[in-house]
Image (cartoon, rainbow, N blue to C red; front, side):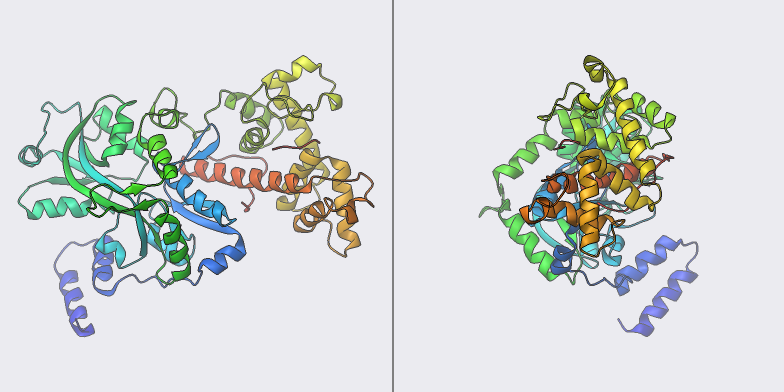
Length: 495
């Protein structure tokens, strides 16, 4: 179609009556394609940065927190790719009024990994990798319906509203069924929400029917009552990762990885999967503690999914010291995995791994969760105050490093940085010095000798990444926190 023809068509749409901005966006995308110009960031740039950024949603299929640790089918699969290339995986959530393809093309992330079904509309905007999953889509309805519809004709004749998000890929299937003569009542959800929230709404009758992957329904229905399986509306939808169209290098690397885990058989009826992929399918598509934690309303925490019986203690201690409880939680996960009986090879004990020889508290009392968190928080608070003259990013990094490795090794590292004409108040320089203190050429001249610098560097990086992630999840759930601000960066040793 020529430009003049498109202008006439758009004018006709504008004059046709009541339209919305979404109507205009859909018209423009259909005829012109995406208005977003994709940034230039391919696999070489990603590898040089050391970080692969995953665009996803917070749900049981893609990404969620379990016992403070990151989980999810999409997260574990893409993290395996990142790990194989020595990359860290950073998670970017799709916010309200945001689209995954715009975040991708604007450069906010590198890969859309969110149970993303391949559709013709999406192909105009992004490039898809090889598929790694086949998905049957079914109608799921609430027990609150007086009838139990099993056929599409019943949904059509009864006018049962089927709720989906406005940009849901399954809208294509529903519109195709409408074209076949099914008078389906399609309604749109006011907000995106996560899978669990949607299932709970169906269970309570707030939503009478929706569309889900069959395996998602099977997993959720084990723990949430009042859900019923309806007819299949689409079979073997292909699910893949989405990348920018100009990222051919990344596409090649992702496809090489996926080919080792998922290939179609000759008849395409049953694909061949790797043992790793089968493990993920069992973990997230069948009954398991991961899914029980996510779906079961009795077990699932209503805040941000930090499933820990010590959350109230952590909040109380943090509030008393003007610290962010998410920071303390990030440290506890790293130190002990929320195990109050933990004891390290160096003799550190409890949730925050306190060394008895540096504590005035009786040894047995250090295993008391409240006492241990209080001692650890006081130590951290002291380190933060010690580095209060630094900016917030460096202050937090220096305080965490000192908590992990001790003040003596930190003094050695900063002195070494100065000897190399580097600013000892910049974490990057001290991080480099800590790594050098594993080399005899450097530690033989250090006052406190050899330092396991790689462990401290990893300790700081992992806690900062986790702290940042906890804050992102908190924002999703409408929570705000005071105290130490989050930073913008992605086994414990003796202090």
